[in-house]
Image (tube, rainbow, N blue to C red):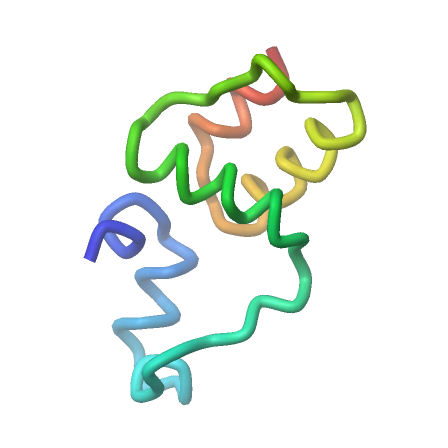
Length: 79
């Protein structure tokens, strides 16, 4: 769905013959839950709620945006 439309990383994961494309869930162990929640919020709303974004959470979000190939989110986080 929407993750595939917005992220080349997830498109490759879910549309290829990888194990993840056949499973009903995936484990993302390289990102904190609160960071991934921000990623999902961005993916679904195309905006970043930065009202409670600390420097540490911004670094984590920037890393996740880079990993999941979300170029616009990287730009928003860098601002």
